Length: 74
Image (cartoon, rainbow, N blue to C red; front, side, top):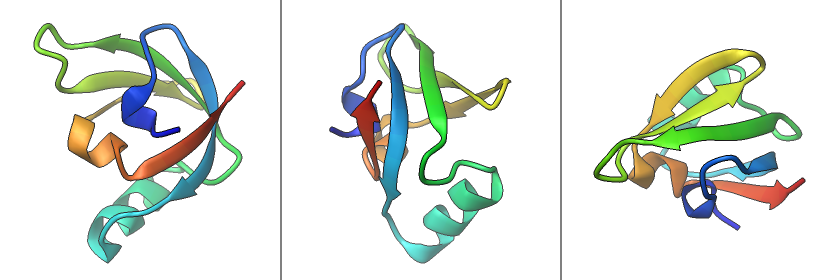
């Protein structure tokens, strides 16, 4: 399942991170690694971007960026 397909309030574990090398590197540098638990806090009113909680901090991703991250529901 893709991170962009999760609904508000769902928790998942990151399975893999795709995308071009610059985007992938930026995501990995933020500490978003395989096996990391991720919680979907909320979506913006127009469904883009989405706010996530990762390792206790809040981060926002565009839906197109989140579509590069594969997750498993917890």
